[in-house]
Image (cartoon, rainbow, N blue to C red; front, top):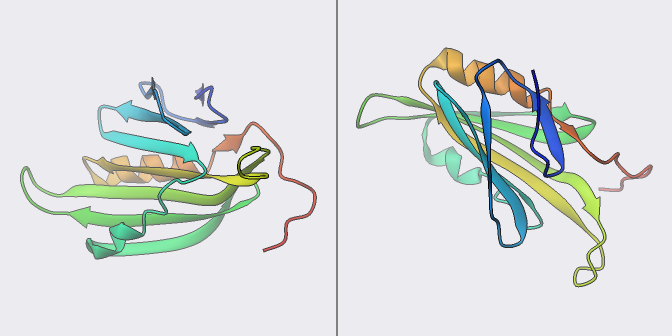
Length: 144
């Protein structure tokens, strides 16, 4: 099913996945929840790159493209408590160009991070990440 956050992006998700919109200060924030996982997202000018995940066990990352944008998917395992939790994160540094008078225009970033109960649940989240679509098209020319 298609799930639209109403905050600048959407994605496809299995039946049973829900969205909780939250009140952010300077960005769009919310949660994506299902019985096997819980994710938090921050879509704004100062969203976290999730590099702190590098300190967790079995860390890995790879670069991909999400709706034409460069993205990094990060994975790790958090041990302790009630057994392992399978961490998953997505970071898109240049998700959406927005004119903001105080910033004279700037890129909004998307950071999504959370934990899954099983490796299969984490794989489901990763597949969902690949279907993310942003409400606005990229500018014609991007210089990095």
